[in-house]
Image 1: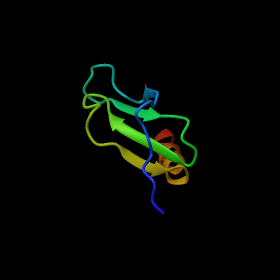
Image 2: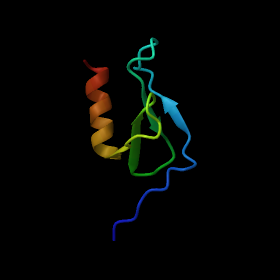
Image 3: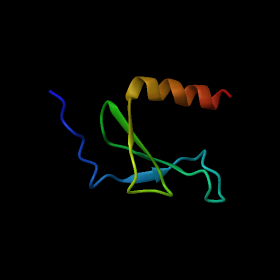
Image 4: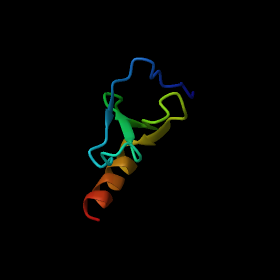
Length: 66
């Protein structure tokens, strides 16, 4: 069964890796166990990408080690 994740009340936070100029702004919503919603802060009504927590953690580790 595939149930949609309700993100209408999600609390979005800007990534610490976003630049300060407003051109590269990624937002992440916390408090969704097992899933990490990600969106472009310049287009908050646009598409939201959903990542499984494990692959997202691996991605973050790679970014930190870059």
